[in-house]
Amino acid sequence: MSRSLRHGALAATATALSIFSLSACAAGNNAETLKIRPDNPATSVGNIKVQNVNVITQPGAGTDGPAVVAATLFNDGTEREVLEAITLPGSNVEVKLQAAGGKGPIVVPAGGQVIIGGKGNAAAVIENSGEAARNGDVQQVVFKLSRTGD
Image (cartoon, rainbow, N blue to C red; front, side, top):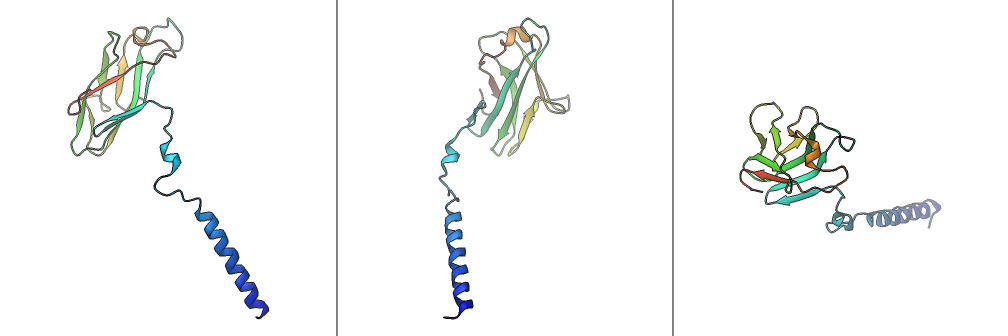
């Protein structure tokens, strides 16, 4: 066997070994990391997914001012959904909804998403944050949609 042939065979073996060892990193369809749930509030009902729900209050206890609900709603369905209301069970607060353009309802388009909170997005405002929740508390938030319900 010639010297160049031995070097070629050695290089091919080294390449094959590296390919096999690197392919072990491919986790496949049942990856364990797919089972890890993030620590942000999220749920789904039917075709609607609600993620990253937060009630953002004023910075200090006893501080007057509004609070807001921030969330992202996803619609995996084939028909649009209208967000009719957001409620905080256990409190008597009213959450005022406003579409991104300032007029009309908040619509979650079919196959799309809507972001509530932040500049240029839809808004959900609670006028008196002191009645909404205390800083650091876990608060239940209910989204009522036209087709899916609560």
